[in-house]
Length: 215
Image (cartoon, rainbow, N blue to C red):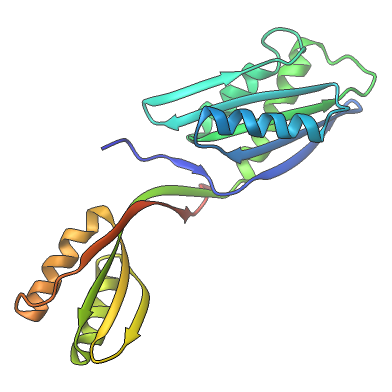
């Protein structure tokens, strides 16, 4: 299986002033090169009067990534590469950032530009909420009333979530599980019901699960 990695949970923006130049960093999750390009174009349109809109992105994570950056008119290696270096060091995947600069009238020099683009990117990387992409099964099962509470217990025990319950002659329950936990849930169901209960997978996919940001 692919190595798990963290991704941004939302889009955020932070600002930095350096010798009257205004740097606005916008960071967002992206899941393809096309999404990254669309985000970059959106920021460029929003800040169309800016001096520079410097993009960097990483698609994928772990050992399987696509990455790209641009200096957008700043001196070579002073803007896009520092922003990309911060993304690489963050441990985030599926992430794009655009650092917008409004020139304030004072030249920063190459070292000053590297520091400014690095710090602006660091601000959004530091503050963005993290999430993990989880592969999930959504399943359905029919159970008698006398087993309801015990089934709820084994759902929770196996890191699942009850999505809904319909009450008729029997109870129809829909549940969601991490893929790796589903087999153990099925085994607990069989043990509980002497082999009579079985959950049927009706959908598989991915979801984002929030995680605590590192200190």
